[in-house]
Length: 400
Ligand code: CTP
Image (cartoon, rainbow, N blue to C red; front, side, top):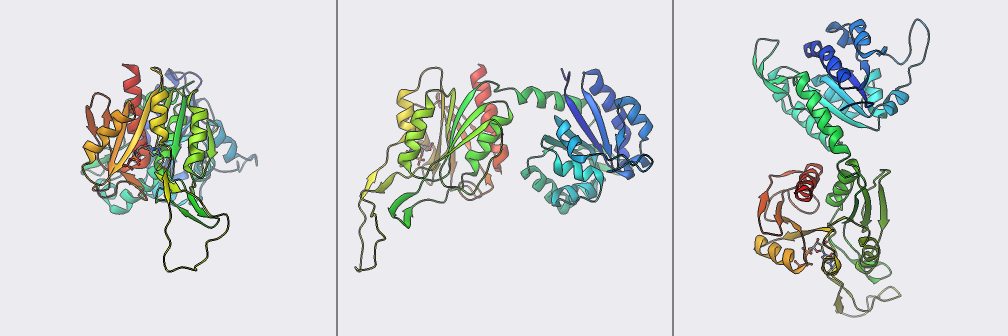
């Protein structure tokens, strides 16, 4: 199942390092290629000879070999890996990873790797429960790392509680699931819209809204990470995405977004319309800056095209269409109306009544409502996790 997969294992100085030789054996049995990088203190708990014998590769611990003077390139090692698993990861290393400290070789590899990183923390219960550790883990998740939460049980200190590194068999299962999921949408074309639109009043002013575009960008990234080819039509946002499977199409106005989506939709298997499109646009934007000559100023606005409504009308049976609804009141009823009026397969409801949900937050709290009106509520999560929930849901629906 893991044949040909290149897995880099980073080991830091925790007693749980004794489990890593078993982990390496299990991964090798599955066909994975293994290289190991360690911090010097890891060798207090497990020997380099054991690790190099089991992995079949020399263990890297420093940027150069003192005996031979050979240079170990952290960049090459980082680029070699399909997955970088740091296990066990101590509270100290978590703090350094969080803030980009690069005072050992393992940390320089972490900073230069482009593949997904999994972190399996191991520490004593009070260290794990300390707010500093929790904050570090939260930030590392926001940076896109996958956390393998420690389990609860007897710890090396004799205390009992959370902090035990997950067992090697479970870690192997998670790695297998990761690689399986990575190709879940291989060959699938996805269209995503994100961000606000700006409707010009004159050359220097516009009507816009507070959408940051983050939710749409996370959805685009998550689909691409699972093998889909994504067209991301983005309104004006301060976000960047650098993924070989994502093509970004920047637009400014609702009319431009409509035009771009109309062109791209026919090739899409799945479309997720996340953008906060302006419903009205100035009827006659001024070509010159409007001067302050009158006491009041009336703008005449006209409705923009409803992009989602339009593609809902032309969608075929083989296309899966997802809309968003951001509501402030009677949320469920409004969302149901949009679901049916716009001929959607799924609507993602978020309401400003929920703290931390909607625009300008790093988090969101959504309810997914299917065409048959069955619904699933999720708790408040960071937007990358919300994106994963939405995509898991779509994958489940498409496989049934
Ligand atoms: N949408 C769209 N084009 C528009 C307006 C909205 O494609 N001109 C899409 C949004 O991307 C979202 C869904 O329609 O997926 C719902 O958007 P929302 O603003 O909540 O609903 P509206 O239909 O505009 O209704 P209202 O503003 O009255 O709530």
